[in-house]
Length: 446
Image (cartoon, rainbow, N blue to C red; front, top):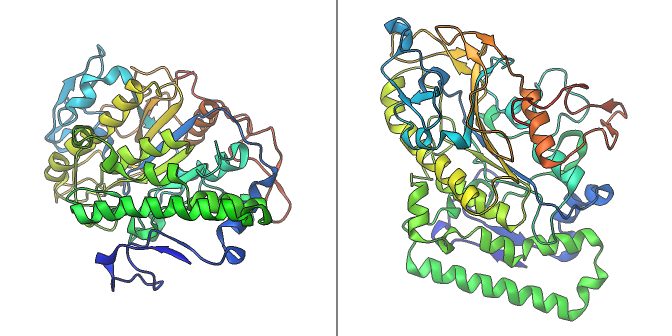
């Protein structure tokens, strides 16, 4: 058995009994569970193209009217403390605490009128494009699972769908599973709940040296099995499992220490061991990690980012939170453009709903499902524009309401996926559409 651990975390256990920073474990080859997760991919073709999606889920519902849709002429109990600033696209203004985004707004598309949000604190709609009510047998699948089903891996050793999402205290924030597509299209989670191990700020030299030795061990382990001929006796799913678990490409992609200090600094740092509220930690370095994974061949990477349920101290928290988000998301988009990936990699950042127009007695904003926002970038889309207009209090969509399924149709279009190319059936054998039949991509973006 090969087991890769962080010794410093010895004795730190999760409720499932595993060490906190267990990275991966390979048991007897005949009993690997990963091959079982891969078997459902047998019917899916492998495409040589490499379109990708990076999805950033902002747990809790970010305040749209304090980010992309400020209302400076509204009454004081609505407009709040933040002021709008001009961007590099004439006529578009956003929050003063998003200056880096303002300077490159030509590379973004804020949607101000997401109009069919649900009222509960759940990431389900963001991750699937559907609502949790009246699910088909087996459940609606995650977007990463859909891409895995229709396109499979880019090449052996790198899974098509990687989740960097932290397990949150509030369970509905957590990602749904592969649904009726089956476990073979589940996400690959590189370090389970201990994803803070992927952030290398303040790492000691000894630990870094250990990782280099670990990589050499993994390479040696793989060569041994290749040379022994035992790989030939394994079924294709076990071979793929072995490829993933011993992939140098995947392992290297997960090591952000290979990036220059300057690049890591551009994304910004925060404490990965400190969850915000009952949401996720604030880890902008995971946006850098997402870019590295896409470069390695991953098709879908998901990141849950911080905690945005600001029922109190909305503006105090915003002054701290928004500049860090601004730094990380602009570094990601800038990198995608500089590396020639902007036409192929779609970026979306959003939460489950918006916030109330009226500020409450605790200087916060409460839940508001009538309208919310989303931020899109890259993917070959027509950026440098705003979609939708709300009323004078940012409480209702009055021009171009946008549905979650329309955003999903756009993302699938960017990926080159025709959802009608393969009939899908739930666990009861009933045919299902992943988004409502007839839903079209957003005309403004294509």
